[in-house]
Image (cartoon, rainbow, N blue to C red):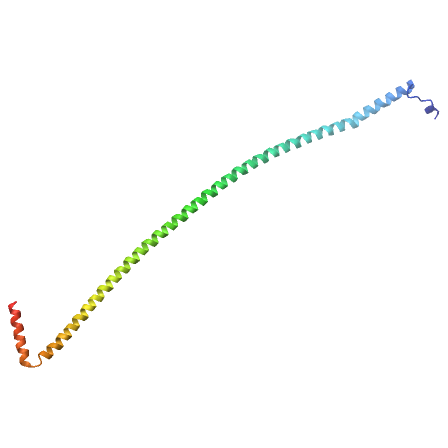
Length: 170
């Protein structure tokens, strides 16, 4: 302890100064060899890793912006395709409706014409039947009248002769 009592910071002892310098030099050499070099290498490695991470983040941001731009283009393209598909579907719908209307109109005309033809045919058949029936009735009436008129034999013979003479005259 006596050594420390005599120590003054303002006026250091030359021997102490030499030994302090030698110890500091050895300490500095050992630290540079075993501590500073690995610490420096790890700091450089960390700096490289940080720079790589920053570069990677920059590339990722650029890639994300490229992907986003591509997604926007795809979205615009998809919207255009959707519009085109909807337009085609609408045109197809209108075409199908127009075609169906045309077919219905043609079918309507055909059915009306068929119905008119059927009505005409039935009308003609009814007129023929009516004429036949009227003719049959006229024949029956004439037959009944002739029977009544020609009830006796002499009248019949006279009537037949008059008819024969009128036929020959024509």
